[in-house]
Structure formats: C-alpha cells, structure tokens
Length: 398
Picture 1 (tube, rainbow, N blue to C red):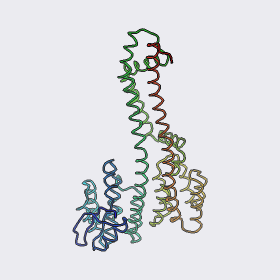
Picture 2: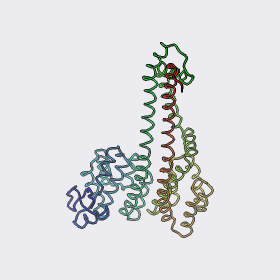
Picture 3: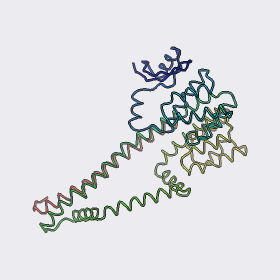
Picture 4: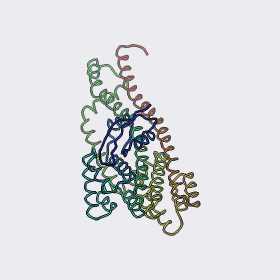
C-alpha cells in the first residue's frame, strides 16, 4: 500500500507532519480527518522529492500550498484571521510567511481579504483576487478557495508536464553542441598539423572542415559575442509589444496544434472557474484574457468581451475570433444554450489538457529523432571527412 507524507493541524493549533499508509491520496485525507485533525497537505514522497530536485519550487508553488492550506482550515470552520495566524506560524517558506503576516495585519486593520491580497500582485494574480472578492460577497469563501485550489493544481500539473517533456531535448541539444565544439576546436587542430607536415592534397570535405575549425578557433570569441549580442537584442525586441506579438505569431506557426490546445485549456479553465465562483461574465472574460500567454490569440479574444457587452454571448464572438478548435466552440455553445456554461468550460479544459499532453508527446516524439539525426549527421560528417583524409594520405583505396 502506498505511503503519503502529510502536514496537519489540530483544532487547538498544534502542527504535525508525518507519513500515512493508504490506498490513494483521497483515502489518506479521509483517514486523517477521522483521526480528528485538519489535513493541510497530503503528497507522495516521490513526487515531492522529484520537484525539489529539479527546482519546481516557485512563487506559483507557494500560492498553491497557501490556497490548499487556507481552504482546509476554513472548511474546518476556523475564522479567517485565526486561519491566517496559523499559516503565518507553520509556513515553510520565509517569503510566504512574511506575506501571510502582512495579510493578517491588513485584515485586522479593517480591510477585506481581497483588498489585502491586492497589495501583493506578484503573488496573487487578478483572477485570484476577483475570485476571492466574489467568495466574500457570497459568503462562500471556503468553496471558492477550494475551486481555486483545483485550478492551481491543474495548471501546475500541466506546466510540470510541459517542462519535464522539454528536459531531454534540452540536454540532448546541449551535449551535442558541446561535443561538436570540442571536436572542432581541440581534436581537429591536432590532425591539421599532421596534414600540413605531409603536404598532400586533402579531400574537399576535409578542407572545408579544417577551415571551419580554424575559423572557430581564431574567431570563436567573436562568434560567441555576436551570438550573445543577437540574443540580447532579440530578447529586448521580444520584451516590446510589437516584438512579443511577432514572437507569439512565430510560435503559433511552428507549433500551432500545441499552442492552441494550451491556450484553449488555460482560457476555459480560468473562465469556468471564475464563473463558477460568482464573478460576472464581463469581469471573468477580462481576467481569462489576461491569463492567455500568446498575444495573437489574446488579441483575437478582445472582440469576445465587446460581443458579450453587446449581449451577443460568448460562443458567437469566440467562433468569429477563429482561434479555438471547433469542438471546444461547439461545447461552449451547448453550455451557453443550456445555462451550464461554467461546467461546460471546465469540461472543455479537462479535455484539452489531456489532448495537450498527447500533442506535446507527439511533438517531442518528432523533435527528439530530428535532433538526434541532425547531431549525428554533423558528427558523422566530421568523422568521415577525417577518415577520407587519412585514407588519401595512406593511399588506401576506398
């Protein structure tokens, strides 16, 4: 039976951590609740260790932990100030502990929780603040935080999947590039001295290779400086609005299927979560548009907010925008007609998150062999060129 790590707290405020044996995470939560404690977090030790090793601990990770723990404390019936006071004492991350203390101070000063969150825009995005504001207005803050927790967990899983899929191609490209540079700058120059002393004519491919090696050895720092300058200039250009639009358009042309599924899942999950939390449609549309990372798609969705303001709903303007897949648009239209738009949006998000994982897997299954083949061809060309030169000097017929 699997073993899970847990963090819990009693109603008296005593914090504890340990391990528990259960069939799955849900069963572990139930077992902890039956012992009379409030479970704050239940995680697989392997998953936790993997994330720590590859550095997935980020501000977004802190936000997920904060939301999970606060939702659990409020669901157990604790008042908001007491829940925040407990979190300020047990938070493992020093930066998050400071922020929680600031939130607690603001609330005791007489302002609302959403207004206190608004003072920390780097940690709490706009859609998060709006969801909390809607929960406060409806008196269902614990339920809203639970929905936010589900949203953040789904977003984290999707992000982790994409990042983990990129690890192998990145390592492959780095090792292949370093190998080629070592061959050209350290190995080939030793052979070039031997070839020069013998004075025999070399095959054209070997001459090209030796010329490239000499060029890289003599002007390598200039090339490196040029690459850094181009990279820095490109980065500054992409930081501008025009450059970001061009870059996002290029990514959309190169990875159309992956980008569209990613943005569809992100938009639908955000909009569905906000609507389910009681946020108005226009406010939810503006927040959901801000979540979209691709400027080309975000620009096309601007018309959706105008259409909703004019009373044309969501599905019609989204269809005219032409940025989301037809199946997603059909499901959104059905949800709008049946009055279950929030549920249908979340269903669309689940479908396209699964589809995105498959699309990323397909893309990587094509990218990896292409990279291996390219690196292999370059190294093979170097080896064959050197062998041809050796055979020609030794007068060995091929």
